[in-house]
Image (cartoon, rainbow over the protein chains, first blue to last red):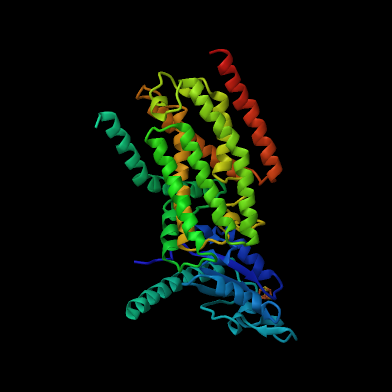
Amino acid sequence: MKDVSKSPWIIHYDGSSCNGCDMEVLASLTPVYDIERFGVINTGDPMQADIFLVTGGINTLNQMVVKQIYDQMPSPKVVVAIGTCACTGGIFKECYNIIGGTDTTIPVDIYVPGCAARPQSIIDGIVQAKECLKQKCIAEQKAAKEGK
Amino acid sequence: MTEEVMIRIAVTAAYIILAPFLGGLLSGLERKLSARMQGRRGPSVFQSFYDVKKLFSKNLQVVNGAQIFIMGSYAFFIVFTGALLFAGWDLLLVFFTLTTAAMFLVAAASCTHSPYSTIGANREMVQMMSYEPMVLLTAVGFYLATGSFDVAEIVKADQMAILKLPGCFIGFMFILTIKLRKSPFDISCSHHAHQEIVKGITTEMSGPCLGLMEISEWYEKVFLFAMIGLFFISSNPLSIIAVVVMCSLAFFLEVLIDNTSARLTWDRMLYSSWTVTLLLGGVNILLLELFK
Ligand code: SF4
């Protein structure tokens, strides 16, 4: 059976944020929180990633970038919005250039709230993203079978 | 068929079938060992197998269709290199095939015209320039020490080649770091994230294509450690123990160096590897020639 959930590789993009959540994502990659124990690799290359971590809100300038990264990722893929900014726009919501949360641009699967989101909840989000990845894989297989 | 031919075929077949398992396990152990050195738990030792399994179940995305064919050729030649070594063929032929394989990798990276992967390809060529002289000197050293380029003859020598080739051995250990793409010489493609050229030569590879690259790396790893073993093997069956011990030590040392050093620039790599080649490899061979 196809199972991609055992090696979730991530790519991380930081949008319009105060960089707080950005730092927390990096913190969860350090030896203290050691997210690599779930098989996570931080790739920096959309073509090799399975999970897209977005921190910060979407503004008129970075909307295209987020779309690009999402489109370049081969399916199955999962999007995790980390922090209040990425979920809804957060404290920047009323700013003139802000469009809103990540889901205004690409479909989001997992929301991790918090300002800043703590490493523990980020890890929780990624573990749930693994499960989501698995479901998507099964759904894709089913679709392929029925297609035949 | 004589008995020797039978043995050669059996050993080669064993390499082709078992090397991916051994290589995958080695790279899993590598990640575990690195994690332990950094004081964390790290992924399972079978993580590399999970990774490759995942890569093969992802969608195939390629920028240039030729890349798949070139990657296939790279994988084929890497397997072929190891097969030639384990079949006991000529050491020079083995090394030339290895270079051919490396050229295919460079072509696979540069055919996509992505700036990141092209820089990676350029750096891979600088890496080749750094390690090739030492590789050739090692072959010459084996010839002078044992009187033959044939691996089948080298393994039948009365004494270990290391006794006559200590300089070549240290030199080979030095270029092993370059060949395995480990810090401080991981300039063309790092195994760790957030490097300045994204993922270097593998930037434009995804899904099955990257999976092929990983499997080739496993084959290459086994081949390289077999080369280390060649320094310690002799006609005495007990030398197998020395081979296993020294290969494990070399493996540990590589991981330690990877974890304790920062990346160098390409020119520092070139100068240092050529200095080591000339000083250790060159002098070793010169002395061997003088006191024959
Ligand atoms: S959610 Fe809070 S901490 Fe995170 S980026 Fe927004 S403002 Fe900063």
